[in-house]
Image (cartoon, rainbow, N blue to C red; front, side):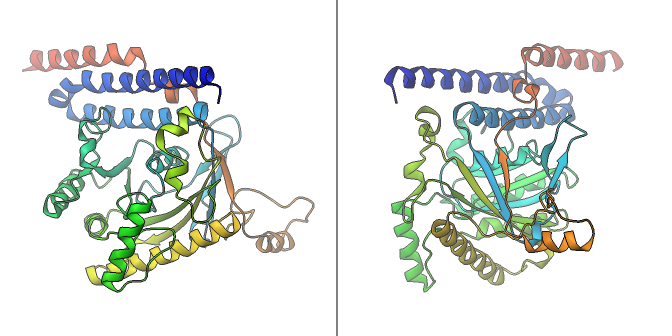
Length: 383
């Protein structure tokens, strides 16, 4: 890359990110009086800024690291896509997914969480994410200060269990919630690959080729806390294009390089499966075995991805809102669609509306403290 172009690109990205993140942080800071005098308004505003940040990340990828999500899945997610022409004035792919769910995934690169946040945008749930993250992110603006994510120490299970339970106890059972969990706990690297193998040998477990052995304790607590208010767990297996068999994804796609060096995957391949929470074991030994079985299947999916360049799919043209040109209507057409399985849904990472990523605007920065003092004045006058 031309050094001058690279420098200008780095400057443009840094300006975009810092300005956008600062605006979001500013509205969060200025809304703090609402936390005392109008907690409900405050929490709704924080949720709104979470949606703005998700749309902001999506636009950042659109401008500096354009990619497409290539969605595949088994029969459990058939009918997941809806073509919505009425709402947006043009045909848009909307994902028909629950308001509340647990979302688990393998962990390939440090940007996984960001791509999942972008994915939630297309289901219109980018305000509803709750991500389990490392505790050292507490000191990062936007992430650790205001979003009510679950931050773990990872070397103190008593603390982490309490943090998960207390955080989920604060969640209203009727509010939208996408709880994102990476059971592997960290990305695949040469070091974590060796540690995972050593643990598998010591514990007498089958090792994996492309994923790490999952940690189950945190996920077990999450599922038991949300039983009764969450119906489904969605399991994503993610693979990135441009990676040869045996290569380490994080080495090819480090986080700064996505935006500074244009070293981003062109396709984010995502294979989805859905499991009913009521069918997931409630006792911990059985649950551990259930998760390990899912990860064995996930490793086999990754093996097929690296061998063939794509995940298997049981989606049909009918599932993704398509049709079969030149075929007659009726049962004959349905049979043709049924035979033409293995379809995927390509979703470019592009925002639908300008205001999605321009908000919160300068108007919000001015309006929030004014609103806070107006509410306080009204309360004083009524007392």
